[in-house]
Length: 134
Image 1 (cartoon, rainbow, N blue to C red):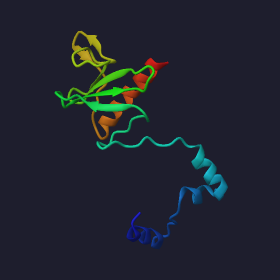
Image 2 (image 1 turned 90 degrees about the horizontal axis):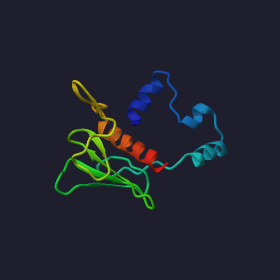
Image 3 (image 1 turned 135 degrees about the horizontal axis):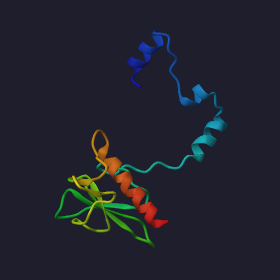
Image 4 (image 1 turned 180 degrees about the vertical axis):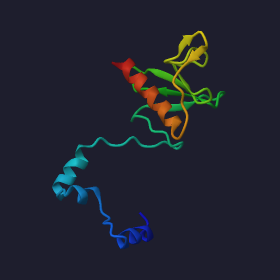
């Protein structure tokens, strides 16, 4: 928080502190909570988060298509189509999207839109691949 905003809040009667202050945690309790948390996934250059060891690579000829690959020994893949906003099983650019159901009015699948839709699409692909790995 910027110092100017902090001073304004304090003048207005608010107290500004950390979550540890709010929960009244001791240093050892705070360290225990921090140590028990899993490390966050490192954001990539494009801002998308994927599990450690997995790769997300753009297809050279199709800029909107990326392949998400798990680690060995299974080494499963899913193709993410950011242009059409869908996920395909394996290394494919023409098959049906995962979760797509055919209806009389046409194809129906989960719509991806709004703030953070790319990360939601990647998270759904990760969920799909984790189910396959089970």
